[in-house]
Length: 69
Image (cartoon, rainbow, N blue to C red; front, side, top):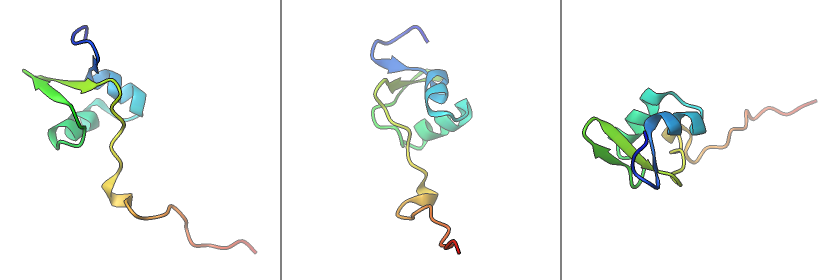
């Protein structure tokens, strides 16, 4: 998207965050990216936007609880 200065496209965000374009589109549609704006059929995402966290893992540690012997 050669467009709005200070914003990136869904494709660029997907490369930066390591997720599919479809997933970034879902983040935008769900309002999980602050400052994202819709222009026609496209989204403009702020350049400094961070990847939204996964709500399935909020407040949890990624520790299996196992101890080594």
